[in-house]
Amino acid sequence: MTSPSAGQPQPFQTGAQAVPTGMAGPEQKARLLSRVIDTLTTGSGLAEVVQAVAGLVTESTNTDVCFVHLLDEDGHKLRLMGATPPFDELAGTVELAMGEGVSGWVAAHGEPVIITDDKRADPRYRYIPSLRGEEFVSMASVPITTGGGSRVGVFNVHTRTRREFTEPDMELLRSVAALVAGAIENTRLHQRLADREEALEHFAERMVELQESERRRLAGEVHDGISQRIVGLSFHLSAAADAVATAPQFAAEQIASAQHLADAALEETRLAIAGLRPPVLDDLGLAASIESLARSVPSEEVTIHVDAAPCELAEHLETAIYRIAQEALQNIVKHAGAQRAEVRLRQTDSSAVLDVSDDGQGFDPAALPTGGGRPVGYGLSGMRERAELIGARLEIDAERGQGTRLTLTVPRNGGSRT
Ligand SMILES: Nc1ncnc2c1ncn2[C@@H]1O[C@H](COP(=O)(O)OP(=O)(O)OP(=O)(O)O)[C@@H](O)[C@H]1O
Ligand SMILES: [Mg+2]
Image (tube, rainbow, N blue to C red; front, top):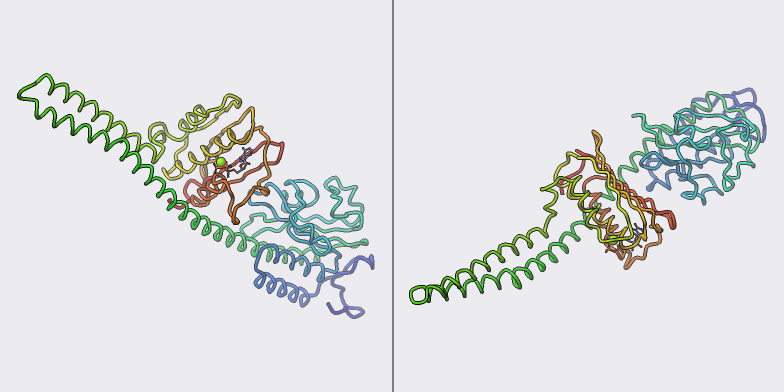
């Protein structure tokens, strides 16, 4: 920025001067906003955009550092996504709950906060050692909210020495926040689309594999079971045909055996078909099917508590939820070492939510082994692919020693049909 000449309104004072600020001139404001727009339109990933905006904001507001905290997709947690150096290295490592600290308060209330000095006296302030709050005196925190009113995050500027933030300063910060909000929303939408496309690709591959193995299974069952029965049946019928005139008793025995084989073939055909789709869903509906799934879990150590409300959902959504619940329970039995597990299913006007939690050993999802860049186990990635395909959100909250919680939120009308 050029230095303002004497007598003119001062845009933003550096903290070092420790005097109240004057107004940001309309020209400076326009210049900053246009640079922000350039940055937003040329940056590629969310992290890159956020980082660049943090730099622009500190430079143009003569502040010493800017932190950008974004809300996660469910709006429960704020995560530091970008900051000016040296704090840029902390991106992704600092988390605040909604309502926690000044940033959490601003995100929860959607209103800015200015603290000119003595942050620690403010009951909303929370000291986070890595952010070195003791080195900064004044701060302003502004909500990042989209035009449609959805909250995206918060950005904070701090100064090393005392500094007043005037209404024009705040106005400028709010304008930058509005631009950033739109860009973040767009970037997230793009990311979601890209994830969904990738999931579709994986799903297509997996479907081909599944179809192949399903075909092999059916071929095996038809060859080893059903067709053997039919060969036997045909043999007994020809013997009966040959004997019917001369030895009716023998012919009757042959027909009885043929009848027996026909029943067995029919039963085996039913079983082969049942393996393709969970028939229990058609018989009982989703809630009762999940209860019956939990009852069938082969484990004596874990007690499974189910609270499943009846839901009205399209068939493909029911199948996806059922399969995800099935894999989640299988994982609990195989890996969790849990004593207690809970499965909850509930429905609102817009979505159905499946929640499966256990009190077992938990795990670190980021540290799972991979083979050739893909996870070794199919279960978790299969669940994610299914969720992506129906436009659902799958969250896995697992930490070593803390148990595991899986939450699947399925939009009732929004998902695409599989
Ligand atoms: N509820 C759980 N508790 C503890 N660890 C779990 C739990 N769920 C998953 N895991 C961990 O995550 C890993 C990956 O799970 P995933 O279902 O993808 O694969 P898998 O169960 O090992 O194999 P597959 O599902 O393909 O038979 C597991 O090997 C296990 O270490
Ligand atoms: Mg598994």
